[in-house]
Every structure is written in structure tokens, then in C-alpha cells.
Image (cartoon, rainbow, N blue to C red; front, side):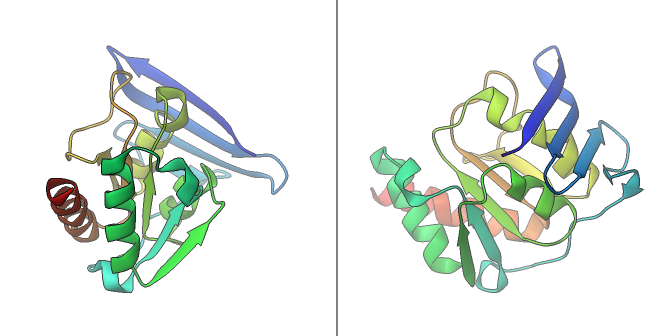
Length: 165
């Protein structure tokens, strides 16, 4: 389990905390500043292509709508290594360079708002499946990546799968 805390200004996440108490890990992201893990700056790693990516999700059973199922199957089929059961800890792993892409469905703003400044402050990107910035008013589909190139490829795969569905 993790504790997620977000501060939003005009609906936009500007401060995020991801706390993993059991492992004594705390990521803090503040808009415009580098993300820290236990007080030390961290950065996401480069991963240009999905075929080389480690991809995280909580579990395939959370992709319940037809478009979410189609997107999940396509992007996880394109990645090198899927890892399940990661939940919000995956955001921290991406921020510190231990993973490449995270794809989720069925989320609420309290599930992703804290991750926005953490991922962005580490040099990554986090959006909805249409590539829109996440706010308190975003939908339930999220993709986060440490590398903008893998993110763009992931979005293309998701959008193609949804269009074919």
C-alpha cells in the first residue's frame, strides 16, 4: 500500500507525495522542481520504444470497458516485460528509473493527482489516453512514462486499438 497526497491549484496537480511506509520511501514532486526520493533528486530512465519497456499495471481485471480492454491488450502485447500488482508504487518506480511505462484504467483523481508532479519532476510524462494533461477532472484512463518517446508510442498503440474496437 501507498499513501498518495496531492495539492491542486485550479484543478491542476502542483504538489504530489507518494509514501511507501514499509520500505521507508517517499517521493515528493513540486511543479517546476526536481522530484526527490527521501530528499535526493531522482530521474526517470530513457526507453525509446515499447518493445524495450517494462510496463506496470495493478492488474488486467481493472480494464473492464471494451476500449480499456482493447488498449490494455495492445500496449501490453507491445511491451517487453509486464509487471502486475504494482498499483501506485509504479509511479515512484518510473520516477526513479526502475520502470518505463504504467497504464491504468478505472482510476479516480485521488489515484493519479499525486503522481503528476512526481513523474513530471523526474523528467517523465503522465497523461490520459488521449494525451491530455491530467487534472482533477480527468477521466479514468492514465498512461505514465519515463521517456516522452515511449509515451508517444504508447499513446499511438492505445489510440489505434481503441479506434479498431
